[in-house]
Image (cartoon, rainbow, N blue to C red):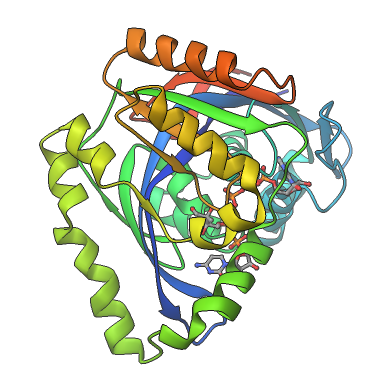
Length: 317
Ligand SMILES: C[C@](O)(CO)[C@H](O)COP(=O)(O)OP(=O)(O)OC[C@H]1O[C@@H](n2ccc(N)nc2=O)[C@H](O)[C@@H]1O
Ligand SMILES: Nc1ncnc2c1ncn2[C@@H]1O[C@H](COP(=O)(O)OP(=O)(O)OP(=O)(O)O)[C@@H](O)[C@H]1O
């Protein structure tokens, strides 16, 4: 029996600009995505029956066909029916550390791990670009999660251009346990409120999105200049999420007051992250926020930016 244990890191968005409406109904984006070392562990093994099974003890994570990890396994079974028949079913166990519905690509990174895990289990030898193509069918954030690191993401978020690694930058994350934001709601609300200024012409969409390559934050990342990166953080989805969730706006404000280099909401939220110049500063920021907001519903984490996507922790035959 084969089995693999994989590490699936979360991501934060250092930059998220909504450019306009795409013909496929999604939004054209210009983003910078960054992996962090807050990660789930995914154990994957061949099963004796020809079924896909997902286990996860987290109360907010479904274990049926709606789990993104299940969908990833089903996609592989559908795409490689001979291998599925040869190797049998797949059992997936998710050890959830990444907060759920948090804007940190928790489900997406689990799906990416399942694609990588099944590629190994079934000895398919897929290339990174083949894995990313499959990943794009599961969700906009899934392709980035395969190789992770630091990357510009355009199109739906699935067209990737790697940037030089930005590792060991200290990050503090904060999320209210009881808050969850639907990504679909965030984009729909943005479209309703700000859609008038959207670009729709495909050519202008693409050229505006590609302008991110020369943006100031990209230059700051290339120079590994934490102060400048923090100054240029940007997320258009804050315009709809912060007014709807004042607690998130307040948390962001407190992160700033705490002396972090900069703070921003990640993705569709509600997680807020702060960039810090050292681990010591991150610890001080975390302590300041904990004292300023003693609410036990607020969870805080220390993390670091990292250079990797899905990693194999252990493998056995
Ligand atoms: C907010 C981010 O996490 C930032 O990285 C992503 O843009 C969202 O990535 P994701 O959760 O993988 O998104 P998907 O599962 O593809 O789509 C979720 C919902 O967001 C909307 N969506 C997503 C990406 C995009 N470029 N435009 C959109 O309008 C979709 O219409 C859908 O209703
Ligand atoms: N493997 C999974 N892990 C977490 N949530 C999952 C998973 N599969 C399905 N879900 C469902 O997906 C919803 C979104 O969860 P997820 O943690 O992926 O959001 P997110 O971090 O905001 O994602 P993104 O940043 O990609 O928009 C949850 O409400 C959950 O019920």
